[in-house]
Each structure stands twice: as C-alpha cells, then as structure tokens.
Image 1: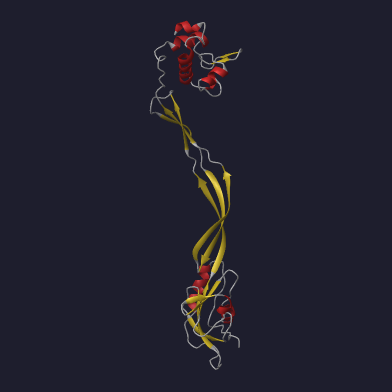
Image 2 (image 1 turned 60 degrees about the vertical axis):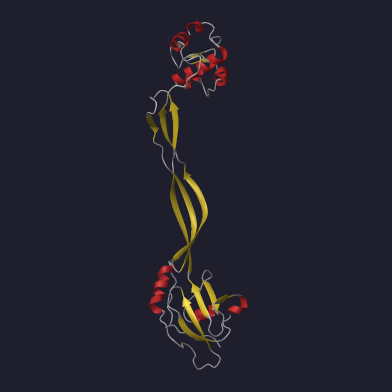
Length: 269
C-alpha cells in the first residue's frame, strides 16, 4: 500500500531562502488526525514534522521510506534536505528507516547559498625613528590605504537559520599600504666620540654637504666608501641617510679606528 496523496495537507514551495519556505509551510501545515486511508487494515500512524511547522499525524503503509511519505503528502525533498526517523526516542538509519507504527519523521529544510564578500585588510602602521625630529615628535609621511580581500564561501541554512560557513576561496585583490610615521628620538651616544668636533670634520671632508659624492667612490658628510659604511651598520648609500645617521656612523668608525679613516681632515676632531 502506498501513502495516500493529500495535497491540501502540506503546501511547501521550494525557494532560494529556506526561511520563506518554512514560513509558508507554517501557515498550511495544520495538525490533523487520522489523515490518510483510514479503512486500510495494515496502515500505521506516523508523525511528520517538517522544518519548523507543527507536527502532523498521518497514516501510511508500513515499511514505507520516509521520503516517499513526505512526497506523497505534498512535501518535496531534495538532495540537500535532512530526513530523520525517530523511533522510541532514538534516531534510526539504513533499512531501519522504513516506517513503523509510532515513528516520527523529521525533515530539516537545507539550503546552500554561495556568498561573495569583499573584506578590508588592515593597512597597519610602520614607524621609523629619526634624529631629524625632536624626541617624541611624530610626523605622518604617508597615510597608506587598506587592502581588499575577496572571499567566496558556501553558507548552509537549516530551516532558514545559518549553521555553517565554509570558505571556498580567498584572494587578495588589493595589497594594503601601511601608514608610515617618522618618530623623533635623541641621537645615539657613542662613548669617546660624542664631544669631538664633527662639524669641522664634515666641513673639511665634504663642505658640510650630506649628499656630496666624490667620483672616486666616496659619499656624504664624512666621505665613506660603501664597504666602510656597511662595516658600521649602514645600508644603501651614505647619501641616502640623514645627516644625523651619517654622524652616528662616523662616530662608530672613530670608536673602532680613531682618526685614521680621515688622514687629512681628522686632525680637526
């Protein structure tokens, strides 16, 4: 015996939003008793509970599959929906899901939606310390900008309520640029070199020009060659560094080698 189709008992139009389907179902899923082929001798009574609607008592043939009974009573079931059978308080599976007297069929309306989001990526802040500003003084040299990350995800809803968010892909579509800030600090002290006349040495070596370049390969206030500059912790070319940093590196060099790196002008220190 097959379950008797009763179109007026359930009206559950499928829609993109599970919440809409559940709301429509709640209006039409009115409880009733002994719905179905009451004259059949082998009919069994089961309870159908679809989404968030009130449960309904129906009759059907024994050992029917729950999905067939739902379809017979006007409730379409797709491959995403969850159909559970509860017997004596426990969920059953496999062939045991064939319906018996007193079983409860619970159908969860499952909708999976593809979502695309564009999220901001923090730009952050990069601080650079300098002796060209007063200690503690700050100067923004670049405001930067936030980045953008595109996320594609699959959202799963049960009876209109989100239960799972699975990220499929992430892609950085715009790189963040950090905010750059100069922060003033006091010049580093170099014991044994702080009290010397570094201004006189710079005037003698380069005319006091931190960007001075000698064609022989000497740079900046104190005419460093690149090898010596790197030996005291400098990076790039000396002419790219501030005058304060060039003086600090010169003091470190003096601490290591005395006046010897400046055989002519070193006497002025």
